Amino acid sequence: MVHQVHAKPACYLIFIALTAVLLFVFFPVTTFAAQRSEILMIGDQDDYVEALQRRLKELGFFDTAPTGYFGIKTQQAVADYQSSAGLQADGKAGPLTLRAVMGNDFILPGSRTSIGKERSDTLYPGDNDSSVAHLQLKLCKLGFYSHGSATGYYGPVTKQAIKRFQRTNNLSVDGIAGPSTLDMLASHDAKSFCIFPGDRSSDVTFMQKRLAQLGFL
Image 1 (spheres, rainbow, N blue to C red):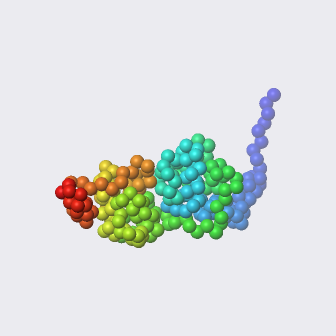
Image 2 (cartoon, rainbow, N blue to C red):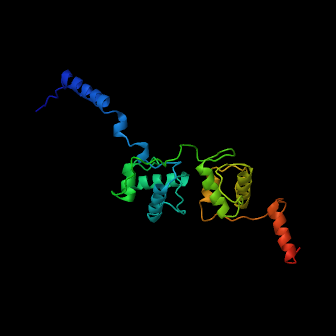
Image 3 (cartoon, rainbow, N blue to C red):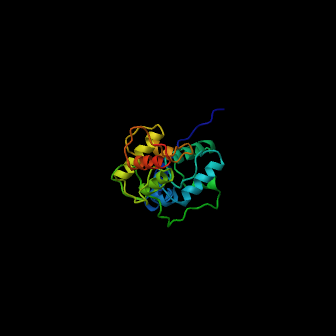
């Protein structure tokens, strides 16, 4: 027995189309998407990012110390987790990803403002913001930055500190804090400050004076 397949009436199709139009008129696309404050993504820097990093580390997706800064390593860790959990692997920790990683009780407040500015994962001489101050604190901890305080300004002192760090850690020495440099700074493998033959600086002078005092120079 042959069953006939009836095409849907034109009025039915028109009704569907009008319904879709009305939905988008009265409920814009933004209402279906998460607000920016509900998403952790590259460039963000706050306690929520650090909490995410700690949890990803516990789950085996993040292999460096939590810093609170959402860089390319955190982005990759999020994407890896999303792939393993069957979520869209975009590297952004939106509501669905955060609930999956952190649990249903972990919710970013709508009033959250510490989301940082969207920018490339590179800091350049001349930059002046909290990201530079964070960079300076890391360099200070490893002995490369000795200005005394984190100024937040990427000037000659910071550029020289970056060059020393890059040289010590076998990176391309350009004085620019790019992805490779920032990743190494966040790694447990980062080497502390060293003085190399041919260096000229106040650090060399201090070392020479100290060696003379000890009778080695």
